[in-house]
Image (cartoon, rainbow, N blue to C red; front, side, top):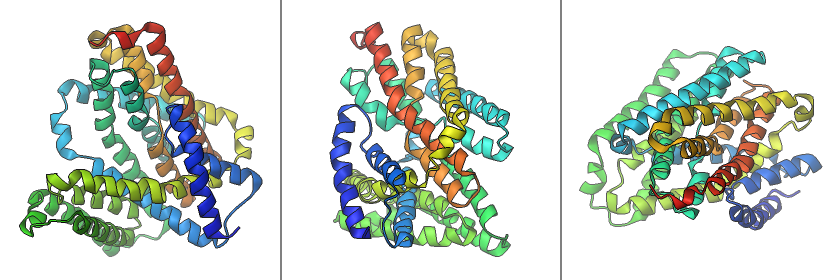
Length: 384
């Protein structure tokens, strides 16, 4: 099928299917993933597949860029010590559960470590609409869920950096000079921008958000190009996002974020998620069903149990169980990490498929389990 026609049909179908998903409290970006899986099943692929793969890779890098932009390092200072402690305890414990499960399935230690960290990250974009619907955002449970989801970004970035480092080492022979340039230059530039804290853009009296968008795009492509010398394009994209965040004056922050959200999630995001769906080895689900089941159940049990254990004294048992279930909701970050590893042939098709499908199950099922707990226990009535 012609690439342009394929993309047009994909965007149109993503809109229709996405509206249906949103009514079920599922992110609309799940729609192109489903479309990619369907295209995989019926073997409908666009012509000029190399151009499609380029757009999908660009989408992955833009998603890493927006993760860096949203990271909000200053926000971590505002989080209470209790939320920071709970995040570290819950995610670390749940990661260990996932790592042990993967090791038991004979997955290599380094892949088990990366996947174990990636599969416990929180899909807060799924949780916010649910909490808002039950008027729970401003409650203790809602505050802790969102706070843990924000601080959880550290685990997301850690997983991405580890995956990017492993991909770089596996995809090319070491070149010390290029590695030093590719890693150190973006890091040094980021530190400079963190130190200046918006002085550059303020000193030029920036009056149009368009100027900041052009600066952001320049940073994105330059950082990715330099980091790619070391095979670490993903790290460059994240650092570019962090740098831009510290260049944007507060009055333009919301507009700039909205614009790059549109670029990352609306323009390139659907292409990336469709690409993930088309890359799955669907037969491996039937051959290795235990692998998918373990990757879904292990992190969920870890999140639910340790979420309850660490917050029950503050929230009470029922809210603590519900919080743990909410923290087990997953989505986009695992797919980025999995695709990074799979595209470089660092992980096998069955493991890649198991990570993606377990994340999809957690996105589809776990929000409804959380909603069931809230309704069953009447938690929305208790605005503590």
